[in-house]
Image (cartoon, one colour):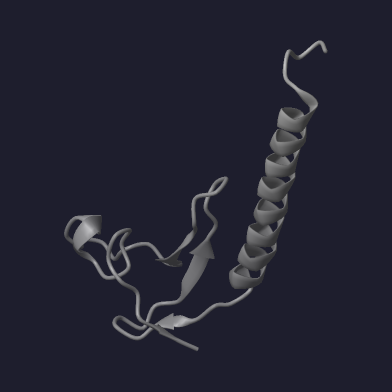
Amino acid sequence: MPSGRRPAERGKSDAAKMLRLESLKVKAELERELETWVPNCTKCGLDVHWVSGLGVSPGHWAHREPAPHGEPDPGSRPGARGSKILLSS
């Protein structure tokens, strides 16, 4: 055996890789569907959109428009990463 692993170990490893691949495919399909929605934030009325996560990381909702000029730091405005966006369709 060139890999040095027993056949049973290779089978488990291959099954785990296939399971991960399948779950990433499902995540990608769901995120593609979420990207088509354009709801409004009920807190500020701005349009929001889905930002896909990388790999297994989940995505998040974010405001479509940039913050208005003179707005305090981005972490304090509604919808900034780490704060809540209230959605309405």
